[in-house]
Length: 242
Image 1 (spheres, one colour):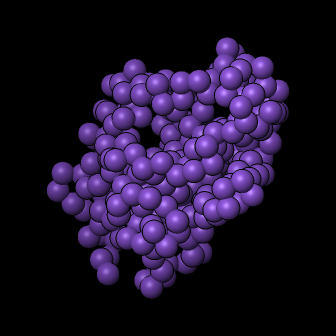
Image 2 (cartoon, one colour):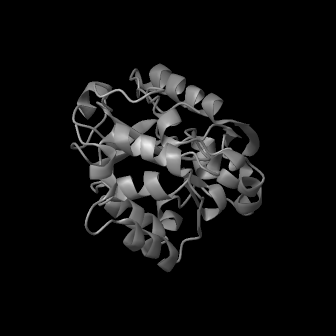
């Protein structure tokens, strides 16, 4: 086990490069200020260094709001709490106090989108959670298909991809005229429930024709998980605690 100073005091820390990357791309990304004390505690539990993008995020960032909050990327709680954005530790049910024997195991939930989509960084035993992809690969639970999709990249490349403005293409067909105003009205602990449901043929054919209402993210994630069980007979597993 590495001590906190070994995780923080490293050569070539990633935060300057990551901060520049997040601000240089066309995507609108709001970087929330962190709580330094809580960030250090998360870093210690994760046992990753500040040389990694993941370590840099939890140490120097309270979370990211991408495209006005359409996507919420988790880090240390910090000021994210004022926006309703939970911290990485809370979402992934870290132990309250440092536990050297605790491991993330199957992976880390690193982001939620307002539709109930979930981005996860695979751990060493992702298959045990029923997820595809290799260890260290990013995967996405798609609320329109109720299935996991491997993304073929690691966490640092994924963050760079977010900054590139790629979400416009990634969510093509899942956004409607005026979605920005609806998202702006949400807190970071809310999502949008659509009717007909996002996975229905009606919604796929005419996303603009759906009715939408704000609901707690925990409700939205619970509905997605139960729907996957009912229609596909497969449990997508842990989608994060909000």
